[in-house]
Length: 248
Length: 168
Image (cartoon, rainbow over all chains, first blue to last red):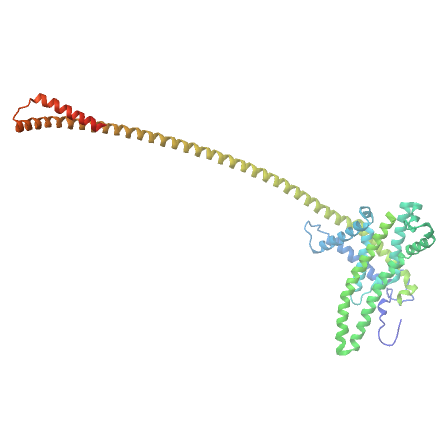
């Protein structure tokens, strides 16, 4: 954290600030309402409004908002039936919630002066751990002790087991890390890059038009990444559920 | 990096849990059932309408087949009638032709009879005249007054054979 020196640090945008009560970081209590909490609650309200108000009329021929709500429903329904199959329908609500929560969190972070809660590793790690523990419990509940055969690649010679099993176990245990770091790092890098390039606009005077154009272009890219990372999070969740249900 | 400051983790975890669980409950209990209900209703309506359309199409096809049959029947009966009329007209024409031919031949025969009568009448009157001429000629040439009866018989013979010869 490069504090002082007048210029804003590109990382300052990730600072957690207490709103109710107004407190600086370092003295924020567990129940304090912060800028992060504000964006989470906004996400909750927006998704609820999007889904419930959009479907309010339930028209046979949908309007714009209803089409979007139905589109998101069918998108995730299609994702689950493609990766998991018909057994995946039970997990539709949780996958849909994860997708919408991450997507709206990412997109809301693109609003200037807002805050991106998905750029915090603790949030993405908590979501990834939710998926990881859920999927592991599901697999053990379904297959019992047979679940541990998951760590033995099918068809591998027994002589290779001492080498392969640790690799499989490590790769399984690193799932929540890769899942959370992927989302966190994408959001962190994107927002930092935007801030760094935006910092050049003022410094270059008339030539500031160049970094400005770049910022505009990168904003478009970031919106794409916001969608993409939410999609990746959802599809990996589906793949893990599929692994839990079918092992290999 | 503010992300790695553990003092801001509890509040984020607390609010994340609160909002995520609330969102999950809303999505699971309220939003998704509503969407699937609407989608199912639409699917039902589509299936219904398709079924109705299929039924109507079948009905229309039945009506079309019936119409085709009626048309074919009407065409057949019209054809039959036309044929009957045609035959009747043809028959009548033949009959008329026959009657006309009969009438014409009768008239021809009558005309021939009349001609023959006229001819024999002409020959008969010619015989008388010839006899008179023969009588007068013989008297003038040889001074013999031939008997009228005799001359008439000879002339009749000659003329008769001539008439017969002409007839051949």
